[in-house]
Image (cartoon, rainbow, N blue to C red):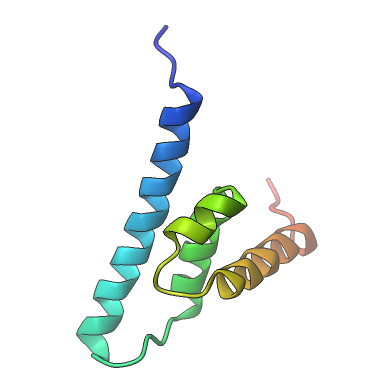
Length: 88
């Protein structure tokens, strides 16, 4: 069985996070062509990919919002998940 090394897994998470950010930038620029105004879904998308990164990678690879803003969204996502657990 072929396995993914920890470095490859880390790189895949970074790439996923960067792609999420770029997709959001493209969407916003097409609509506004000004300051980034993100929807709840866009903030959630960035939080979901950003929460997977270690703090150092979040600092190094978060480019369209401030790291503190991303972490605020991540905390809200975790709080929402623990407040409203998924039902089967």
